[in-house]
Image (cartoon, rainbow, N blue to C red; front, side, top):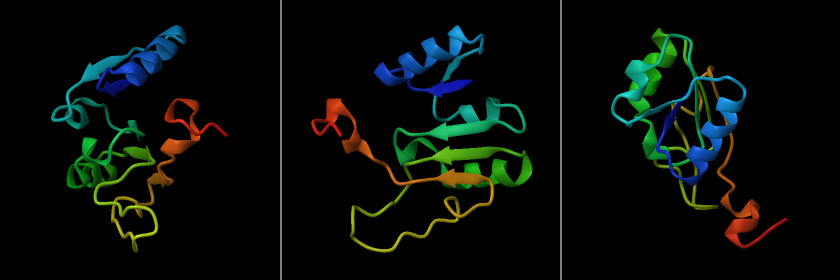
Length: 110
C-alpha cells in the first residue's frame, strides 16, 4: 500500500494496514503512480490535486489500475453547477462526493 502524505490520517491508515501484514510505503506525489505495480488500486480521500488526472487516466487505461475517490480536481463547490470529469466517469473508477462535515472533529457530528 502506498500512502501519499503521512499526516495524522495517513499515519493512522499506515498503522492499521501494518497490523494486517500489509507493506506500507510513503511516497511523494510526483513518483507514486510510476512506482506502483500494474493493477494497483489507488484510493484518494484527501485532495483532488493529489492525483494528476491525465497521468491517472493513462494508468487506468494501460496498466489496469483502479481508483476510488471522493475528491476531484476542479470539482464545483456545493450546488454551484455541473461537474464533468473524464476521470470520474471512467469505468475503473468508483467515486462519491467529499463529505468532510460528517465527522465529529469537523464540528458537526451525526
